[in-house]
Amino acid sequence: MDSKYILETEHVSKSFGSLEVLKDINLKVKKGEVICIIGPSGAGKSTYLRSLNQLEKITSGKIFIKGDLFLHRENDKTVERIAKEKQKELLLEMGMCFQRFNLFPHKTVLENIMIAPIKVKNVDKETARKEALELLKSVGLEEKADEYPNRLSGGQQQRVAIARALAMKPEIMLFDEPTSALDPELVGDVLQVMKDLAKEGMTMLCVTHEMGFAKEVADRVIFMADGVIAEEGTPDEVFNNPQNPRTQNFLKSILEA
Image 1 (cartoon, rainbow, N blue to C red):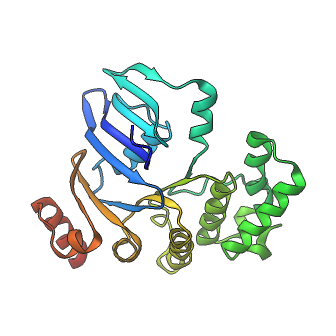
Image 2: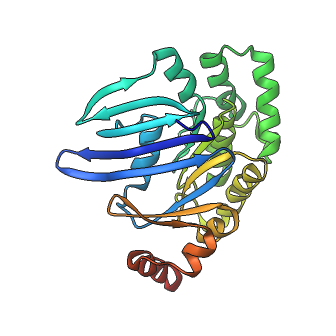
Image 3: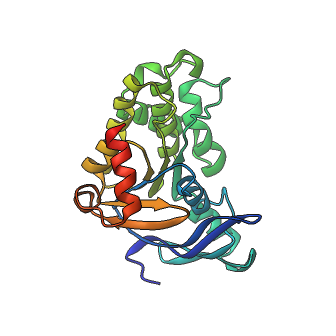
């Protein structure tokens, strides 16, 4: 497999019983590329992201990470996959930020960020603390290190969640509508953190309803509908000259909303 791609999926499908939510998804992602995935609810966008880091198990298809065959399944059965240690190593290359923040309420902001590097990567506490503080500074929350999550706004909690994911030093960040649960006035700070990550060269796959963000930051925009990639291209191509009627109707409904 061509190692110039950091992530690839070939013919990926996913069914829940008789409901097929992903249908033959083929995608190649270059290192440092920012891809925004848009589309109506129920299109399969979140399921696709969750299948990449094994929160959902694909029914069939292949997933490659950094040129290595991570998983091959057919008819809901595993045909081939890499060794467990390699599997764990590659899974740690992907960080994920969800709609909900999922912070540990009984731990401080700093402890939330430190816990995974210490428990999973055996990083010593002092190093983990230093790196966590640097990450908090990068998301503009250094002064909140000793606060508990319930003392933060939703936007602040989401920025902590991003910092927590980055603490594992992933090469790929997956964002599943990270601003959808936020009040409108809190969205900007979270999007700014994501813009900064893009400028720093982080490979990102973002499911989003923030069309302005997609126009500004994405290298490529993917429109999903009914479990398939219906259209893809540059932001200019997709937003200003969409070819698929489904894309045209979706964007018209969004812009007129």
